[in-house]
Length: 356
Image (cartoon, rainbow, N blue to C red; front, side, top):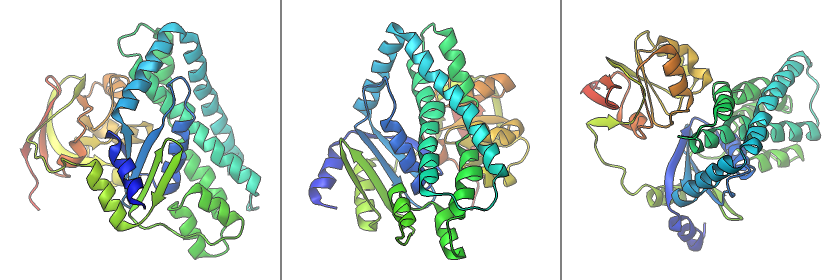
């Protein structure tokens, strides 16, 4: 990467926006989805760093605040347009169930390029309408009297199909394109870009990226690569104050109550196997796929979220103490730590760290 490109990245007021256990292919689809969102004034700057396990998303703070303000004004002036856009999410969720059912019944014939392109574009739209846009609306309607809109947001935020679509549709169709097990392993790693996958369909070799992949969209420029030194430089530019130590973790009260228990951090489904009844669930951001452990947990703590997020809605329904929007819980806490979740005051206190 050129020095001027690094300087461009360094000039943006980045803030950690999301952290997800996604691979390269999926988070670039996610980035393309952000570019398609209407009614927020457009997104110029978005960045991703991928370390082989977690994808860290970054946004410009000024741009993000501007997006929310533009959307909030649109909601106040033309709520019917926003409700119509949210209704697209309801419809696409119905459609995804039909597609999953269709591919459950299809045999082993290879899909053609047009079919693959359709599935990828549908996947991007699934992110847009059933996940990202409802999330933005949920933030923008805080304090507004828009009952119908809140109902639509709740309905969309409580259900998520992008994991099922990947597992039951993309995995099944992509794996059919492999001529040998090595290629199949590479395909199902998803450690490549959509453009590289289309090049593979045209006969080029598909290679996995390293565990130091970066992808930044700056206006119309796309800067990406997997050079370890460049990855380190970019990460240092974005994270200037990472070493601060915390005794108490503060967040937003989603449902009150005070309980104590052992921490279990959950990133994805395979973590469920070691989750015990009565553990304290610590996660980046809750979603419907976490319901098996949410039902078993004593309390919920999340890095992200607002009063309309999935964790907050479910905590109120199940009457479980819940603190959201801590920003740092998954970074500060570790599996086995004994903590007190004081959701009366929005504070997580570390009673005893688990000794290694």
